[in-house]
Length: 517
Image (cartoon, rainbow, N blue to C red; front, side):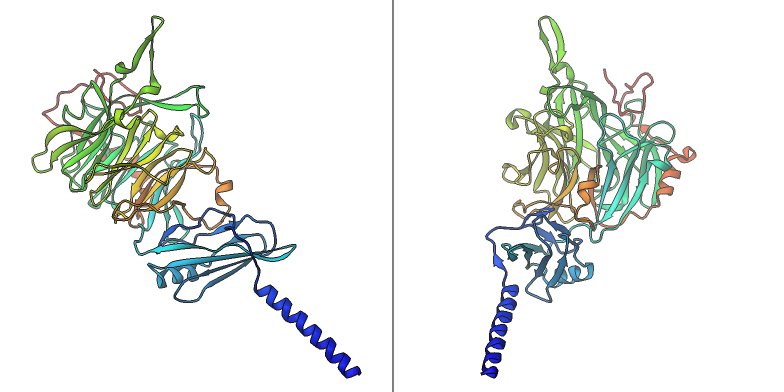
């Protein structure tokens, strides 16, 4: 009897042990996705992106995450606090082995009732790679003043970030307008302003030079666009000023009171233009060359006098009615002759202001920003991204938009990805987001640039400004940029094309200012 009793106890214990094991291996299913931040659910990722680290925002402890794919071993991660940091080598291998396939994420958490399994989700691995680097300016999201700023580059395949130039070594200067020839860091430019050392730094054909693009016709150029030939850069020349109001939650606004377009011929060190793109009756800004170099897109609006209204006998500027249209003008790179000016999309038909046009590398699409008004959309909640199909003429508000400002953008070299600036996380700080675009212009769900620390964006209270995708690392040392900026003995002073008549008079400050007649 004792043996039978002992056997019965052992058998019962065995059943309980087996049940416990089975229960532990088969968590109770939950019919919903887990809450994770950043939101990396159901996205498309390039096969060369850094690990998409995240945190699980669910009650319980500990957490288990399994990332699997058709080929190779799955990645298994355990975490006590929900912070999920994916091992770099394992991540790289699973992406490389499964390009064109999908990653499957399975997340479990242990709570008071035991292990719970959330609904799995998948991320497609695109065979279209993204440019390896992203260059951007980091600034404080201040109201009118800044102290520290810098242009940085981030390796998108890792978490490595390094400075391109910081104003700590340029006597506190403002730096902006970094731009590249077809995503090539070996042909790039940036602008510095603020007293001695101001000017445009251009790295061209292996030579880093400092250029003063101001002439008797114009002040220094701002928003740039490299001609595909690499022989010239189109600039706008803007008279910008920040002002404040109390009509909206965001009290900042920027007014462009006069602007023209110029073209700097690098090899000839000459500035040229044409009355069609530098009309005193209009404001022209945000130039963008087509990939074939035979047309120039830009944005244009009537001058400020057109927006002056009278109320009770008092004149006032209707600044919230200023709207820009998308324009295009033909250009012959061989003869440098300009064709006829045409309106591609009018502000009236778009019921808003069009800014920041960027043509896709294949020449099929124009990606642009539309807001209620203004040429400075980063402060406007109404700022959204739109796509114009140049073959069909169809205009579409993109699915990647949010309720906050979505603005500045740039294409990858292969035209299958673009990055844009979005304030969707908090309405205050802009972050870089990426989208995949197929040959028909269809978008994937956007995702924020991954960080090693999954909680990074909660504590990094700065803004990523002007994100530009770059094929490879910028190799010029920050000190070389700074030394060139402060070496006026080698400065190139641009000459004015003899066909243009001088029209700039008087002294001015360091703001970008065009001639105003």
